[in-house]
Image 1 (cartoon, rainbow, N blue to C red):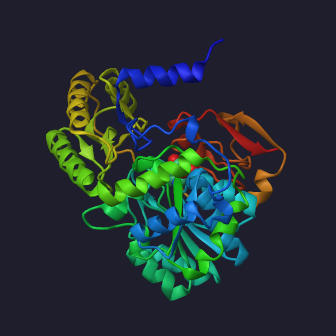
Image 2 (tube, rainbow, N blue to C red):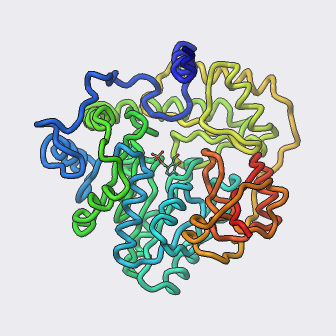
Length: 438
Ligand SMILES: Cc1ncc(COP(=O)(O)O)c(C=O)c1O
């Protein structure tokens, strides 16, 4: 019988491609095979009532990250986002959120029936990334009693928000600060610790699987607050499978040892290599600023088509994390090696030789906040239909259907799809949308 998934994975592993994409283990984590895949037998503890080996490991992770508490997730950051937002729901808070959220946020908001007030970033790298105005956050909080703030930092391109400054504003208004740090599990171990909890966030999720040597699905929910430490596990259990994977939890346990013993040396090697790569290409390519492990090439601004560069890189043996016409994201991790960077440099050199030159242009996007006519929850749970984007003007967006990546909403659920949205859908190659039935 055909085994298309397994065959693809074996073929990819055998190809020796340089993995400039998640997961962060880059195919080099210790094997965690079926002999380690058990259930909650005696002595194995139980994630949602943890008091034994799982709790011991979580406490060790908490002390590594300097948190009040840390909880393991075998359901990725998605589960941690659901838990953070459920804790806000219990307190009846309105969520002030920077718009470039991952769709995991919107889905959780729909499930929980949350009220969201958007703060629009000034987009610079398509809909994935933009700068946030502290003034806008302050305004939103001044207008919204009993709020919390939700930020994605680093975002998909690696751009970091000024968490310290936002946290100071949040404290002034009594608003907890929640960070989607799915892309920043390694930040605690950078030469200067810039993890959201260190910088003042009350809670954050880290997808260990994105930038640490952990299996896909491995994530952590951190909090700096004793109060939220008391509620988050229960919130998580509302959404999680009752059979969390032991290999995933074991990979978090191994990550903890790696972070304690080895990660700083590996980060230092990688930072030197990333710096060398950027210096090699700086005359020919513009790079976005932010977390160094996200090497974001501004292709359009440098006179290239991002999708063509990604294809040429693939032909040269390097697979990127994400590409669109404007940008290419190479997501590296402390597990990348000197040899990876040598091969990536050669592949990029050849790609730039072979690629068609275009007039350099900026790929900024202007996306005015679409008009909201329904709550997120009501629109997601209304009867809906999938229609071509070209016919969607004036229709109400139901469940958000953007491919992952970018997974960032263009129109959010409950908003009216307008001409601007349609142009952006087309720009991302999105051909159909879910809309509420008339
Ligand atoms: C910014 C952001 N947040 C959250 C998630 C969801 O994380 P996970 O895949 O660990 O559930 C992703 C996934 O790509 C993401 O990019």
